[in-house]
Amino acid sequence: MLTKAPHLFDDATRVTAGDSRWQGKTSPDYWAFVGPFGGCTAATILRALIDHPQRAGDPLSMTVNFCAPIAEGAFDLDVRLVKANRSSQHWSVEMTQAGEVTTLATAVFAERRPSWSHQQAAFPHSVPFEQARSFPRTPMTWTHQYDFRFVEGEPSFYGSPA
Image (cartoon, rainbow, N blue to C red):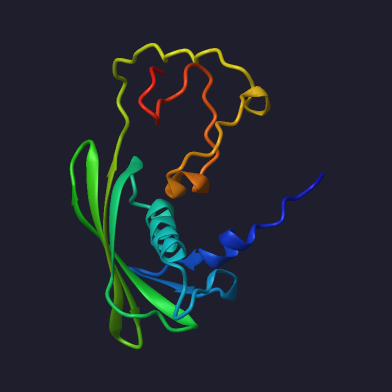
């Protein structure tokens, strides 16, 4: 049987549970100029919340405030359930290093309830991208940054009807 090796992102966002404090460490694989990429930091916090034994429901929203640069190495996450009711939970997380707050986050989780749905719109029929004719360059230089391809009709840049 094949076992799937963890992805670098799995390793970079790995956290270990404590009582209220969780621990993690930065990863050189997701390092930016002065610290870890913000998305990796946010994902690490979200992973701690998702893995928390008191968590109920799915993440609906998350706000992350980057207060100070995160240094290379270990950090602590103070994960706290602020308020819970029968369908939603509000969480607060403080990331600290050497006793200093580097990142603050709040998140809302909720149980998904059965609800109404609607019919998805069908994708319109069109020719494949490779078969759509590339629109010729215009005198407006900013348009040279793009490859315009129109499936039906063409815009009028010169005052003639489209």
